[in-house]
Image (cartoon, rainbow, N blue to C red; front, side, top):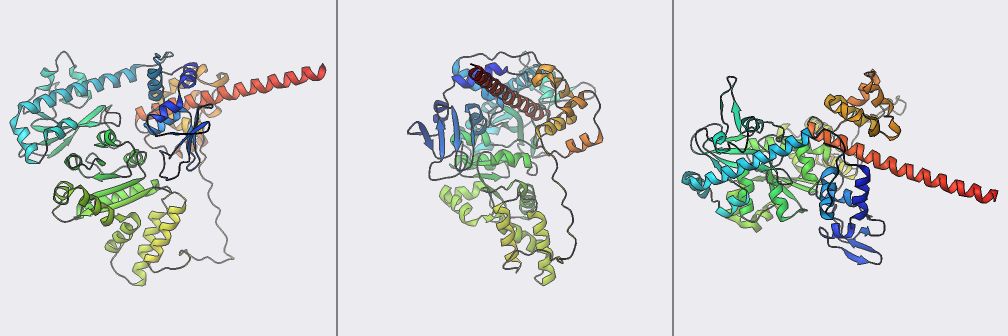
Length: 541
């Protein structure tokens, strides 16, 4: 992705009206020279979120969120830095001047998105031409309006896609998006055949992949796109884009098991349901969801498989459970799925079930351990408590972690001060291992070691203030990294770093923020130098 010149970024920020941009998303009320609202980034009843037009700045005195108009768009609309600048520039009628850089990756992704959009249109047209597919959806209770909202389609039996999109999409592009499978002998065939098609969209509405449900007998029942340049199933969430069209900041999101669960709940006016893409829940998916809301409710079948999936989700979620976040688990009665339950009980009944029948994550944890480790004697309770604390210790430090530990201790019969292993006062205290060093330079080093293809992006001198990269990066460029450099880099835990596109965006964002920070520091140095010079002139005069 090519770099946006700093001067252009400054111009866009200075010309953008932060009150107008935020006011389109948050109801602002004028208070003196400022504007106030309840903060969109945390739950509150009394406004503590203020926008200051004179400084083109926002700040929340409740949660500490603050920044300029670019930062707000990135946080509220979940955009990366270049996309936020593009949106603001578009509002101002400005065209972004790109500095010299490698546009190949960006152009490639843009083109593949066009190919998936063309395929989506073709699948949708097929649905209208195949009564058997329409009958299948009607039998499941779907309306035409719901099918249109989720852009459902149909892939007929046989190999038709390459011919249908001839002149619009090249065969290699169809292979790259996972729509065609190419054999070793060069023969190509459609991946999706005789299947209802569910387009999978990213939070901005781009079709990144597809799911297909076979009609009639056939295995597998559900088939997803393979990993591609666009589609990474451990990062995506089905139904999030559609949910955000109804409410960008829901009080909670319901995580269900499949495409049809999401769609049929939406048809029954429950629009805040999403699904993982046929895999165990990942930290990246939960991180994405927690950027939309502070409360997640997993709604699974009450059978053994549903319980196992919930336990895995709990283990993945605990390290993300900062203060202010909530996590609950609801298990449907035997023989019920979200669709049958909401149709029988209605939206109000389904919401009551989630509100009163869902378990807090601490209760689910103790319930799971009671089932996994039978017995109620002292030894059994000690084993349960030890395992519970192993999981709780993965949570971030804070009030939520302390309260969870206290609740678990009480469940196991440990009252008063939370149970800890007693140690002799005279026993030597083991030295605490210092936390891993974490700085912007170390994060950059980790990104570049993980993806050597990005190294060329930091070679030009104009990337760095004064033309000199940090010492660690300089050693990397000189192929002179030592063991300590590599150890520090390996200690940097960065979610999503395995994905080149995500890593590229991280790198560009860090460099952009670094340039802005250094430019501001340089201006302040010049101002101080000018003031000092004036002072000397006055004294000499």
